[in-house]
Length: 382
Image (cartoon, rainbow, N blue to C red; front, side, top):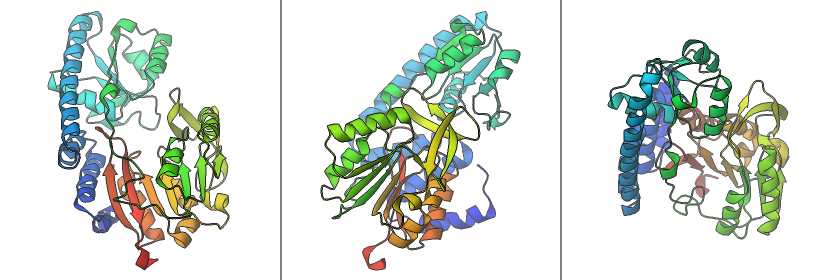
């Protein structure tokens, strides 16, 4: 991520708006990670925040993570020794995201240097990740069809295997890096009483509602709520969401089969895995999705709490909630980890709308996912 002079000016202002030491610590490490792409900053962040704030259970989880990684590295090392003689001697990491960077780290630790990353995202091909080039699948097939391929992604493993099979790449040369079985979660994202207290007649905006779990948690946290708007653009998940609203007997829920954006329009998405998690907006594609602005949905009515976990569309969605935020100053819980620039641009935009907002940041997993920015205006400032 490149930093402009304006970014350098806004970062201290954002830091001043962070209300406690934990928020400042998390912000610093995530900023360093966004600037460098070095996954070790996330490990360092977890080493401090987890042990200091989360207690013995997270320490044990960290120990398990270390043992699992050692096992995984030993398994990878055995695979390479066995199959490198069958290949052209090159290693390709499929997936240039967080898991790919983690794999690069471990490969270098055991003495191997990958030839390149491979990724399906056209916007990052021909780029470089930690000095390694990022190539397309077409380039992989043409230049390195007999290389060892290490699949290092959070999802899409089966899809990538099929993709490589169609390219006549031998399954014997494919290794799948699995980390998710020890990805641990803790806390209660969005509903920590130390951050927000529920109020009577809350109007909750659940952007990225998935199958309704967050709406259910909100209803338990704030039984006296007035209304819930549950927005989910993925049709498969929306059907599950609608069914779960009935099954859980949630009252006064408005399910909306759309995503939040800066305006009302139709976009394209790349669907993320079988359950749609991780689906991202693209300029072109075959899967269409309807998006709407929050200001349009509410039509001047208020919201008291807006939550957004929408896979990198948070900035556009905030633009579409501009009038609501400026007029009603609702509590905000905005995911801060989908794009490197989010660590600067999201709090910056919120402060442009309402300078009185204050921030807290919390992190909820043993990896780089689920860092949430909480924003609020003190009662006396309303």
